[in-house]
Length: 120
Image (cartoon, rainbow, N blue to C red; front, top):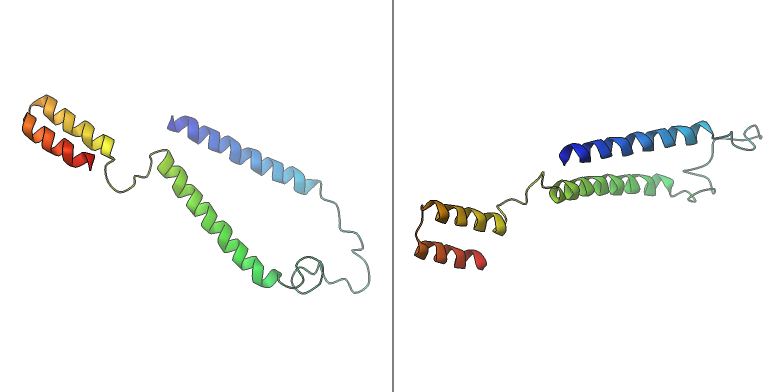
């Protein structure tokens, strides 16, 4: 199962990288590039894209994107069981309790008491 997930993730990453390369290779030059007084495409100080807020909003968006990537990675790791939630799940604890009871390590009374505690 983990090999399949790793293979799928690798395939998606390679596909995304190839798509980005093809898109960049097809990009044409900007119109009016040789116009007088051309100083770039005014992302930070001009009135074209964000009206001068690129210098403020750019770092904020970058931090939000990085936080989103980290949160997404943690969510996926917990979803696939690679990173635990800190302690054994109740089903796992009940399974271990049943196993100890089946081996004869605990008696019926102790089994029932511990099972009742796990139900809470």
